[in-house]
Length: 284
Image 1: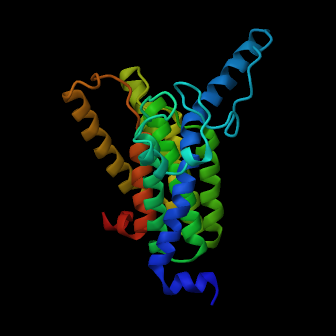
Image 2 (image 1 turned 120 degrees about the vertical axis):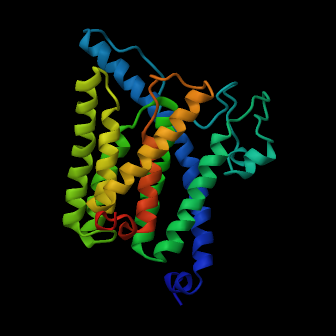
Image 3 (image 1 turned 90 degrees about the horizontal axis):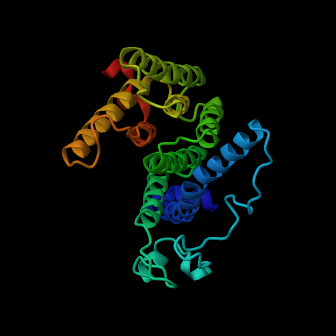
């Protein structure tokens, strides 16, 4: 019996294996969430210096692999046993072993969320390529949601590869026919592009960033165009509800810019894992 056959007979074992993989991937996503925005800022600083005709300031290497993982407060390098997903955070009681500074709850939350989504992909699609592809989609959505929530950025380095990966996956119709995926990518971008310009012309202010347009295009490429109305409706309702709640609790101002990407990402994951049939336009 091959491993794929074993997982097909024992779906819970497949879900458990996927969850373990999700913990590992979630640990890497934490690195992406923290470092990618800073890498983008450094790139912008270099570009600005070059446009001014100046020599970019020398800086130590900073990317997803260097420097090694460390405490952001005291720069204490983490040993391997301090970097085990979830377990290390619990063992350290959420604090740095060197300086005692609290470690953000986001680290175990991202790891557990990714593990849960990977397990859901295994249960939904079984031991098949679709499960692996869906897990990749979910991982990208987790990273985008947390980056946008913390920085109001949706990096092209994630959204654009995610769009092309959706079209590639649907060459074989893993989640939607290719024609529906292509239309979904175009419709997703154009739909929010119209909203963007309508709000700008009506108010003189930008209502969303271009990253939101690219993210919805990517979701359309994965799910097909039929899912887009429900994705937009669900994400909009969630965004308005949470935004009003934050204003009511005085944790946000009425005209303060708030991230929309986390709601799009959540709705996109729900549409992909649920299957576009339950949100298709004809059923609405």
